[in-house]
Image (cartoon, rainbow, N blue to C red; front, side, top):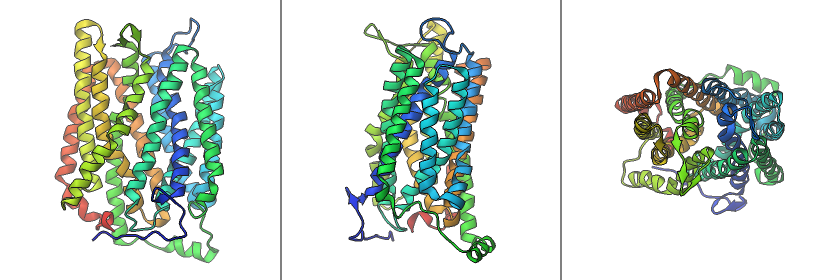
Length: 446
């Protein structure tokens, strides 16, 4: 039976949720605005010609994809030390503050027009995301006591903040960068991060009970080091490791969006609409647009299954997400076939691909964050969140490797291969779902 948590009268709430959720919501909204704003410009800036009014670096697609892969992988791998620092020294709240300051510096440096400033800005962003990303997500979970039925919905609300930022960023930063100057676009992303940092700073009174470092004596530290995990905790960690593998597969396919598919939109797609050429970076907003418009529908489908007595586990939802997202690459295969015939492909193939990718993401990604806070042992909560984002980083590097390989084998073969692999992998996970669920020891229902 699902536990019902009664909200204490002393808790400050907004729309039935802790007020701190909305501080974190807007902080993450602006952080994601800055990240996705520069992400929309990253590869197309690198391959832009070195001549003309809006100069890029003039790199090849392969070079741009390799740097994009390393950059996005390191962004998420940095979440491991970020989680460790929070667990052992600063606490989640202060580590998020420090990460935000680094992000303001990083995005601000990218506004300068030089190769050195580009690399320096990326380095600060890597460190900043490592400090902010795993800990702000853990803080969302910390707002809700165990057994609180509002927790999953709280993560969905938080996820909306991520995607509102991700929707507007390519439209604004992408348009400014492609139309006027790449570094103006990067600078606009910096403005967004500064706003997010102010929101977080002035919202501290609503976060007084979450994200603090736990003060323990030397004897207690020694006792904790000797404290062994129970068998149930070990089993649950095994499930988390399986979920991390699934996350690598999911993002390895999904993150073609910022690399191969972004370049495909720029170089091989007919983007003219009623005589006006749609900026290639704008296609990066489709994912967030579909998330905002479809999240309630997808969430309601899973909720109806739960009400009818057939609740789906998070592992099953992630597997279904991989399956649906994989089908999106069928449309990219059709786009590549059309390009072979006519020398261009239509925009609607990209739109359909992003639609299926989004439906897959809505099944897989929001529940992942909540899932980790339920299964991870308390003493390793931030570290496990860091490992989750590290798995996302490995997926990003895999995505880049696939994109680079597409230069040799062609997009048609690449998109077809992604579709086949995702389909087979998803069915494999579904086939072994029962023993995986047993290892969770009903963690999702307590």
